[in-house]
Length: 289
Image 1 (cartoon, rainbow, N blue to C red):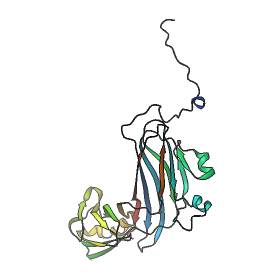
Image 2 (image 1 turned 30 degrees about the horizontal axis):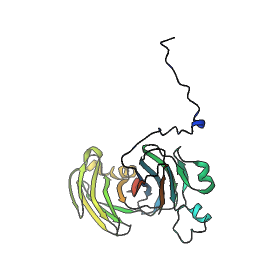
Image 3 (image 1 turned 90 degrees about the vertical axis):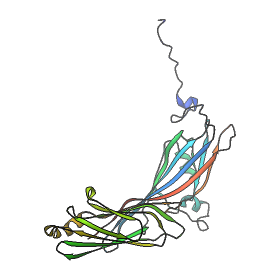
Image 4 (image 1 turned 180 degrees about the vertical axis):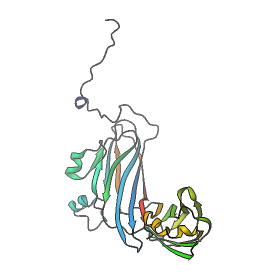
């Protein structure tokens, strides 16, 4: 019996008011909370420029470095809330669908008055996600024309145009143009960025580090094709669309805004909240044929 370990019987969580996702007694030298509002744009554009499918998937990603047991409150320009307060006509509001919360959010409170209140986990977590099915215009419009000069020479002309305002800048833009697997000897010219042939991906990659709003850039690429493959070129392009990747910092498609982010903790410290907005390409595709 002397060797038996003493096991303290823990009272149930409801009694201690403990939170399963956060330990007691957490201490940070600097109390900070970072919130990234990240929106991914999923878009499919047909070869004649029609938007076939569009949706925006959003996520509020947090990193919390807060001492003790902080209570956080977050306010968004949420249409339901602003309508209820009779303020939606004066303020731009967003209609969020499919809202999903992290387990730390008090759902009953949100359902009664649309307040997002929570005791955050320590470190990184996704506070909430949402979707918008409102039609989205392409942020970077890409069109491609294919010209066959002979049975074995093919030329692609790709135009990329940004449709967002001049004060925004897209970064890390990559346009992946599929080419036939046996294309050889490319000669490439572009008005911005650089384009390289990636045979392992059967594609031409056009990369532009910085793409300001209301700008248009162009790329021309010539390839040699074995004459037999020329007939298969169209079949090939039916299968694979052009793929577009980009990020636009300080920008959201939906117009979602964080109206406030408050941190209340019984010791009364002041926490610094940091908020960033980023829009990125999700599945962003342009059909060639």
